Length: 164
Image (cartoon, rainbow, N blue to C red; front, side, top):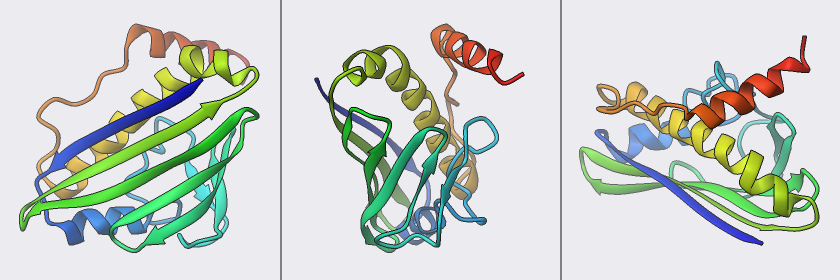
């Protein structure tokens, strides 16, 4: 099963401001990742090729990085995830920038079932929360903040039951 998933948002800020969000990913000064609502993205060192880490049970390595412009993470876990996710900063003009996240996975074994029913709904909600944060940090906030679907709320509730 192949999955290609793209989330993007037009942010009312220049490429330098949006790029600064990208450059802090996974570190103490990370203002993009929605760590209050989701497992935090943590890297073993500042964002650079070869840095390793992840969020929750999802693990990856930084495979490519152009400061302020683009970063690609290659998956190491969970089992059956073969592919990458990446952020790109795409300037439109001096005051508007598109922040894009792309996920490309070739799901194997049990991931063929867990991706569509578990991982993808949670991924989509998390990424929309991250894009909301980009708008809050660089502009006046989103005009229509993301909302979790009832299914995402159910998955999160079921997941929290084992943590108690």
